Image (cartoon, rainbow, N blue to C red; front, side, top):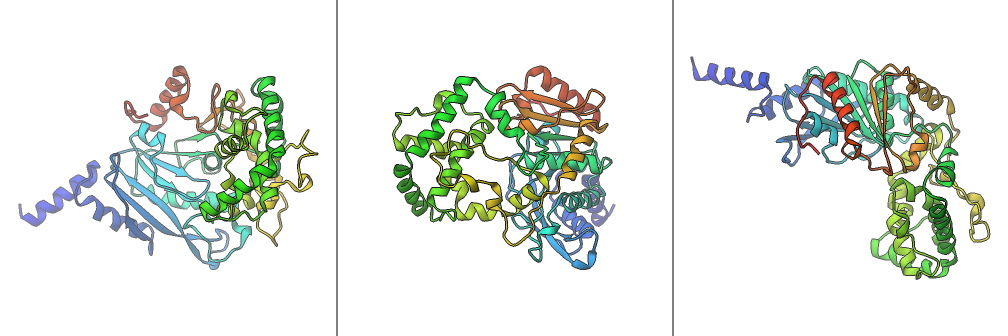
Length: 433
């Protein structure tokens, strides 16, 4: 056999059995360029889990109903393990970042992280907010997965966290044949522009009455210490080279009414709440830990501008309860998340979409696994599958917005693992968590 023929035979062998050989990178680049003409591929730093990692900027239709409007480049992070491995599509809700998701480790899979349109590097050619919606975003995912599935032919699953978790459920419901199953972490399905179920959750349904009273008292203490907190906020702006576009007092007002939502979302212990005798410094540090004043700085507001547009027009979000705080708030009547939205554009909430998808998710015959934390405020807007549904819901007692499969009760983990094996046709990785 000639050397040339031998080399070709070895290359084909490596390609077919899914081993990451020296030639795999070149094979992969060539195939990706065929799948996505004019894409931009750059190699990323390898990790202990993946020896080939690429950032791909894929030409994506800006308007899937009108190709004449042109394309934008959508960022996809590709983590290659092997062509014989299972495949995981990660549906981000915001900007993507380099990380290996829990489910990719469990499945020992290739991983494809898709950045949400209008975030990070996935920016539109023009700032037309009307094309930032679920309809367009789900078709972004459908296009990318269908193309990649021509190269990665083993079973596919999808997963996402929070807004990305909702996106992964919506994707499975909209394009059920694309993936065998979806695992949606802490995925809310709000049904109002500022869904009141979130307030009912932290006012009546979670924690003890003693703890809820302590939270309410802390909100008041914080506002009473306004004069001492204001200079600390000024110093924070200088230290971090940021500004607070709302102004210092309105930022303090927002942080105070945000506090109970964030406290339960991240599942803080009640014994960490400073009492009314705490110093302004202690109070400031606690607010920084639970709410984070930088959430209201100019850089963060700009970063999440697209998210707020989508929250307030289609996705739904949460509002604020000012009960018992009226005398201490300066801007009580204008405390709404609409404050953080783009200006000079319609912000009318299109409620029918999420209401209809919530109904569909509740009775769906698609295999979607929902994972929630009991304390997490967003769990109040979570999906509770009907007994006739093929979907499943697992809740971590006392868990927050970071709840993972590994945090669930052993019997719940075993049940999930059985489903993963059945639908993905893989041997699960041991000690993957």
